[in-house]
Image (cartoon, rainbow over all chains, first blue to last red; front, top):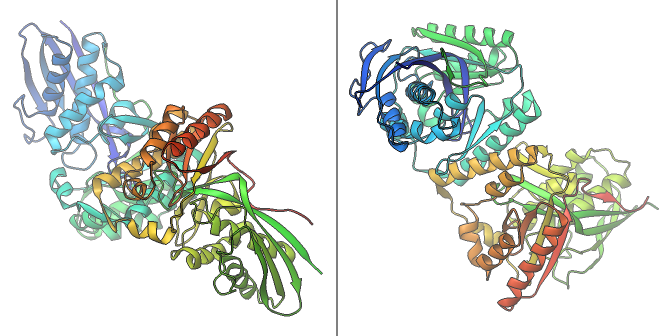
Amino acid sequence: MVRVKAFAPASVANVACGFDVFGFALEQPGDVVEILLNDTGEITIKEITGDQGLLPRHVDENTCSVAMRQFLKSLNLSTGVEISLHKQLPLGSGMGSSAASAVAALVAINHAVQNPLTRKQLLPFAVEAERIACGTAHADNVAPSLLGGFVLIRDKATLDIISIPVPEELHAVVVHPHIEIRTSDARQAMKKMISIDDAIKQWGNAAALIAGMMKSDYELIGRSLEDVVAEPVRSIFIPGYQQVKQAALQAGALGCSISGSGPSLFALCKNQEVAKHTAHSMTEAFNRIGLTSDQFISTINHEGAKILND
Amino acid sequence: MVRVKAFAPASVANVACGFDVFGFALEQPGDVVEILLNDTGEITIKEITGDQGLLPRHVDENTCSVAMRQFLKSLNLSTGVEISLHKQLPLGSGMGSSAASAVAALVAINHAVQNPLTRKQLLPFAVEAERIACGTAHADNVAPSLLGGFVLIRDKATLDIISIPVPEELHAVVVHPHIEIRTSDARQAMKKMISIDDAIKQWGNAAALIAGMMKSDYELIGRSLEDVVAEPVRSIFIPGYQQVKQAALQAGALGCSISGSGPSLFALCKNQEVAKHTAHSMTEAFNRIGLTSDQFISTINHEGAKILND
């Protein structure tokens, strides 16, 4: 009887100027998926913990089972799988919750059947699962959760993924206020057309953020963490957004913006000390408007998803 | 009597995916400006050669004198200057012709008065001169012509210019067909609004081109040299555009697109041999539709503008 447990980390998508193309993985938190192969030929969901009963239990709707079924089908495998999902990521937080579940499931099943596919080859199945969860097939959470590091999705049609080196001491802060935004709602708020002037600003910043990361130029990273496309429309959904962002910048963060589609905010900081100070200031700013929140401080996770036992 | 001669190189702006934010300098061709200081307190244009009489001779309209006057005014200098401009760059070619003249003039006058300003400090005067020549104050030709190298203009309001390292062996080909497009016309053809999907593709490619350059990853450079914003509307003005681009790619070029606002096309190649073959194929393709052209092959010019005598 093959039993495998896998972990996949939370991730921050968009990263201010890189709407739909940038994402990075955190060390913690993350989701854990445990699977048990059997000879029923069926995929079943045994249990889901940590979701307060909110996630779909039906195999056609759950990201873990959807991803896993696509994987098994593509390899013509008829094994049965019993899935247990232990959610450690808050739902609807903008931290790549659905992505982490799908990725953990895929890494687990791939390992259980002797790793026929590489990490990158697992990506399309995870993207397909995102389509089920969010309504669009975006890769900016699944790619970093699966592969680790800071990634650029040059082209989502071909899943051309590029790993971007980042400064070793770079720390991320994510603060999750206790309100929920559905990714599909946040995406609908996006405009279908943008002005060429805004677009130019955005790709100037996107290119500059890559240069800043690869040059370990913290000031350039800071100047590039500007979003003139998604932030203006999405920040409206997040109470206290401007105050929390200002608190992060005043605490010394290089930049601060929305994590994914929110409501979490992320900040990048040049070291752990500034990160701690930033996390504290952001949490305090949410407190002042009566919102409780969770905070996470992490270096960039370069490993991505991993197997927890063997 | 102070006499100074300066050279400023041609440049390729936009570089496919970096509309208004990327540009690089060529070794040749370039414009030469010779100045002679005098005590008249006036700026005069003594002669312009190589322009077939097409450039404005009036000091309020010529990019050299406009740039120089702004420079002198900002430093409260009342010296007179007699300007000779030797155009070696074809006008209206999309190779940064007006930028090269303004930059050569600025580098010459700065040198003549003992270099009170750094190269980067000269930039605003050159941008202002571009406004006179092209109707908009863009920096994607003046910045590379002045500073050399491959540059990213992260923000044109603050002129935040970032130098991007490129692979040593990278060669550029520029082929200039003998037709003229006015920059202001080409800019008017641009749409004021673009779809978010096109914008995402463009900043994915812009970010990836920077990563490709800094990693010396030729395949990534090639995949990133795609323009879904300017090329579709501007290539219409260039007879034989698709055939010439295909000829470049078939000859082994990493990518090929419009140089600035055209009509010149540029290609990037991984070494000199491929560049020569590419230039030949592109020229032949223009020949087949009855257009003569000039071709230029160059590594990236890292020096930028320079003083020719002392």
